[in-house]
Every structure is written in structure tokens, then in C-alpha cells.
Image (cartoon, rainbow, N blue to C red; front, side):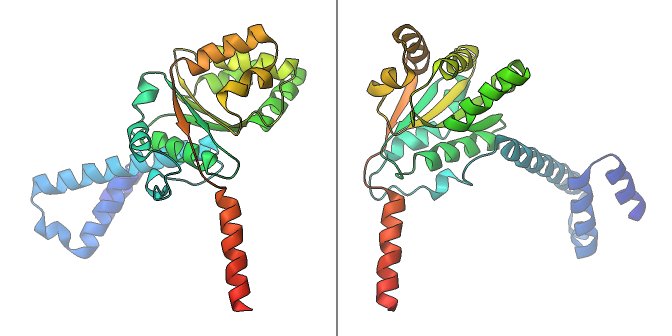
Length: 250
């Protein structure tokens, strides 16, 4: 048994080795036929590789939240349940479509975007999360130190790019140019999720320079799924509930 385990591990069949060892130690191998044992070992290796790949993908995505579709609550009608479940199959990525999530601050836009991103990772897609302010600041630094094209290439390779909190502040010329290049590289080839407190109707003003704003929005909005979240801030709601509990204790 030890010789077999050593060979499996040397071939990097780690899931298979673990399943084989557990079967030997528990005595389950005696209940398996030869075909069942082979099936069990292959499925264990498949699951292990899938899980390790997904963990790497999630780590590389650098999500703001550890989120999942299953943890989203729909009781307060903040968001359309059927729409979210349709988007959760991630077929919009296959079709190279975008998602725009808008709503007031603290309502859960970033969490929802991250949940869809995690779902995409579980299905084998490459995903990258970017906060808009940090993204544009980093692109300015990259322009100065010569790594600009490398940064663009990294984003272009992702199946799904999440740009969070877009529109916190108006774009200057450099940020506007960077956004145009990012969106142009992805147009018709991959997908973007953008979250914003600002309604889409106000994005022209955020981007500035009418011609470039038209070009960017034409590429983003044309084939985008719109998710409009409604209701009060969840952060504010949790803060009030915490204060109420504190008052009750005192």
C-alpha cells in the first residue's frame, strides 16, 4: 500500500492517493469491486483537481467579499430573484455580455457582483476584481513605470472583469483613456461587471468628453444586463440593529 501511495504522490495524483489511503484504512476497499475502486479513485482525483483549481482562481481574482449566490437573501425584494438565478449560470460570459449593477450605497452591489464572480470561478472562468479608484490609480503608476501594457494584458486575459464602485469621482484624462482601452480590449471577447451608485444616465458626466463617453458606453451598455437594487442601506440597517441590541442589554 505504501509503495502505491508513493507512486501516486510522485505522479501528483494527490486526490487519488488520499482516497486510496482512506479506503485502505477504513476497510472500504473490501466492499468495492475492481471497477468501483477505479471509479472511486478517478472521481476523487477529478474532484481534488477541480477544487484546487477553483481555489487558485478565487485567490487570483482578489474578491472584496467571500460571497456566494446561495447566501443572497431575496425576502426584502432588493433584487429580482429570477434575474439573479439566470445570471448565476454564467452563460452571459459565453455570450460576452456585461452586467451593470446600480443602487444606493451599502445596498449590497459589491457583494452581489462578488457572488456572481465566485460562481464564475467555480465554473472554470478566470475572474479579476478591481475597485475603480485603485484601478485607475494603479494604471497611472503603470503608465509612469512602463508596466501599463502588462496591466492591460493581465485584464484582457480574464474571462470576467469586475469594476466596483464606478463613478465615485469624475474621470480625468488619463483614467478616461485607460477605461477606454480596457473596455475596447474586452468588447465582443469577454465580459465586465460594473457596480455603481450612479445611474447609467449619469455616466456621461462621470466619464467626461462626450465622444469618448459615447464610445465607452456604447461598448458597455449595448449588451448589458441591468440589475437595479432597491431599498435601504444594509450597512445602516445592521448598524441600527446593533444599536438596538446594545440598548436592550443596557
